[in-house]
Image 1 (cartoon, rainbow, N blue to C red):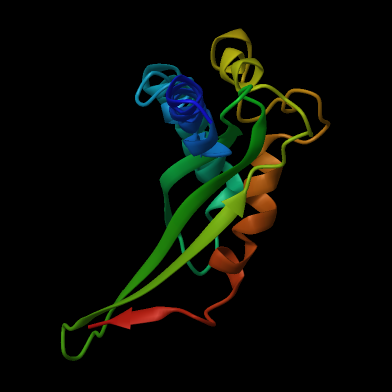
Image 2: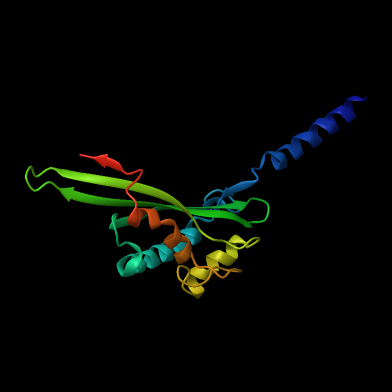
Length: 170
């Protein structure tokens, strides 16, 4: 093998290396490049939080864990084309009781990770557009028949009715 052929082969491998090093999936906030999706995804998250607050006041947050707050929304997308793989929402529920005789407060804390029911092969951009076009929390998600609300309502059931797995803090 000649020296120029060897150099060309090494150069070709060097050029191909970044494409191979790219992860298969990235967080939606980092698509198409690190940090570039943050503003658009934050807008969608803001609208989902508004919907959660309305639903929580209506019926979603009644029961044992009457104080519930969404903690973090995360969506994974294919890095090569921006198609959604999954979205999850961490939600924390608490209930506080005060012992009337000692004045000591006791807290029970429960967290759940809720999967947002996505249709398959939906581009991230299509989901992000729902933040401005319609109600992204209560309306059916793109390509599907289920809303983010129903995905969350099915998931937080243990927060409103079950004390198993609660963490007690005194």
